[in-house]
Every structure is written in structure tokens, then in C-alpha cells.
Image (cartoon, rainbow, N blue to C red; front, top):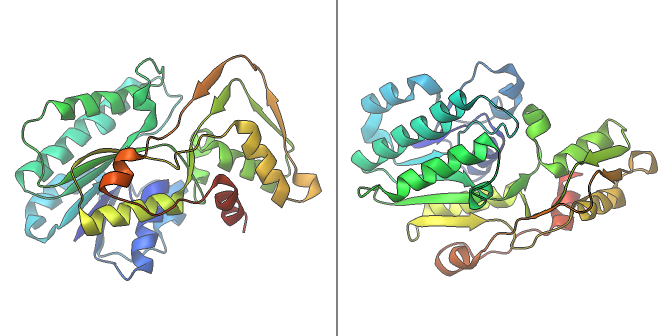
Length: 285
């Protein structure tokens, strides 16, 4: 069995769909399935069972001999929340329990972290919670038989609706187009690495099938793009009345994020990723 936490979320649900497409349905989905806004993400998936997040560890103790692999993709990803309690509970303490369980039961583990952990001064509590867990992991002498932390950059694609203001910049513009709004506004100019969710799913499948060298890997395209390029690219494919105008409140303040793929390419996944233009074209189909 393959355990996937956060299975009703954006990345995990797309990963489950990719596994189904490859004929894999021995999946145990873990999440808070009471959230109606996420229902469409998992309702059409093929899986063996789904378990409420708070019941996972009890279930896991009873079924440990059936668990072959754990993908811990669940997290609270609210970039704007100021309530640290939920980040501490889900992104730190829950993740520690998943790690410890995989370690002592000798189960391979892949978990999701974030490119924002590279910026230790980032003011997002989400980013800080991911950073805290990564630093805790560094100190652990005992580890699962295979483990990998995947530091995802700006992932975009379909089924982001439930994330609302936390959705990717690409999806926000896409949503604007669908609602025939014409202006997208941003306070700062972020130049970052955008990776299509289907490529992320392929990377996750690779780690499932090959279990390369353990460690933390950065996962993006390796190319950063300005926000204006995202807008211009989407404008190529939409109707005239859907074209977007980007309004930047500050042109002086810049943030730059780009994945270093050297470790991923050397030790693991070597297939090419879709360019931003190719990914956006696929999204708009």
C-alpha cells in the first residue's frame, strides 16, 4: 500500500491521479475529508481506502505490514495566516510523527518541503514551520531506510481552486481570465521558478519507483521567470476580452527564487520539464 497524506490537496491529488493513470490504485488517502471545497479533488480517484488525518497513526499501527511507502504531502500552506498554532500542529509536530513512524517501522518516506525555507528571513509562518521541521530532521541520527525531502518551487496547474488566495500566481491569472476580470495586481515583483504540477507528479513517481540517494532535492524547472512573463504568456492564448493587465505597486522590490537542479539531475530525475509556455498552454486546454 502507498500512503499519501494531504491527498485532497492540490499536489497530492494530482499525484494520485497520475498513479491511477499508471494502473496503481492501492492507495491509502490521508486528509481532512470533511472539507467540502476539496471534494472534487479526490472524488474521482481510485484508491483502497481513505482515512481521516487524526486517525492515521492508529490505523497505521494496525496495518503496518501492508504499508510499502509513505508520501507525506499534507501541510497547512496558508501564506497569510498569523495563527502559528495550526502550523506548529500540522507542519511541525504531525510531520515529526510521520518521520518517526517511518523511521521505526522501516518504511521509505518522501515528504514535501518548500523553496521558501531557503529564505530564513521570510515572514510567512508557513515558511518558518517548514524551515523548523527541516532543521529538526537534520539533527535526527535515525532515519527511514530511504527518505527524500522535495523542496518544491512555485507549482501551478488545475485543481487549485480550494487554495483561494494561496493559489499560484499562474492560477490566479488563469482564474481572472475565466471570470473575465482584466487586472491583476501585485505589491512586489517576484521572479521565480514555475513548475507544472504534472511534472511534479512525474518526479514523485520516479522517487517511488527508484528510491535514489536519500536527501533533500530542489524541484523546479531551473529557470526563473518574471511575473510579467507569466501574464504575457497567458495573454497569448486567451480571448481579447480575457487579456490581463499587470499592475505592480512597487517596481523596486524584487524577490528571486530559482531551483538548483544539480542534485536532482545527478542522482535522480533527468527528464526535461515543461517550460512555462508549455505548461500554461496545457493548463488552458
